[in-house]
Length: 226
Ligand SMILES: Cc1cc2nc3c(=O)[nH]c(=O)nc-3n(C[C@H](O)[C@H](O)[C@H](O)COP(=O)(O)O)c2cc1C
Image (cartoon, rainbow, N blue to C red; front, top):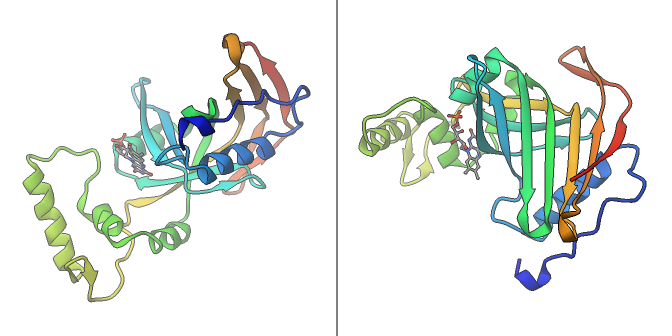
């Protein structure tokens, strides 16, 4: 998006809406439709490691369900983040759309998607992403790039991939790869304003375990000082 098209960002409504989903979805839609950055749906995922220390990395948001109240991402369950989530299943997410002067912070408990849900999403992935899900023991050391490329070649051979084309049956999901849901217990929408008098709306609610997910209480909206 050229700089001249950068929005003069509006503050949040004087009276914060009772629920945050409408605003959040409109911000996400705007960031995506205006192509404000190459990966507008990327979010920082911060977790607590088993030893209590924090760790953070980028992942792509692959779905938002405002009815149930979660955001989804996919990864290797044996990766560093997967191990952190197995120990402490709570996450913080941050979206930052620099040109829109907007930041979104989300916190809440995390659940794993079922095998069937993970299968369905894996089947939509491009071939190179499917190969990589098999060939990378994500977060584990490897002696060289060549060693990694040899693993990729071995997986391509195993699944009958030649010249980037698959000749055999479809590639199944690796059992250690799948989706996670971050259930939104609190969300803050931040918008940059002149004179550093930025605007912040915080929405919080209580989540109680309910089947595979959580049942949400009513939202409480609060304006915060910048
Ligand atoms: C823009 C961007 C998007 C990414 N999206 C994902 C993703 O959706 N899933 C994933 O496993 N890793 C993704 N990565 C790689 C992660 O940031 C990270 O390097 C990797 O998952 C290993 O993290 P871990 O060692 O903490 O488990 C992405 C990286 C970038 C820069």
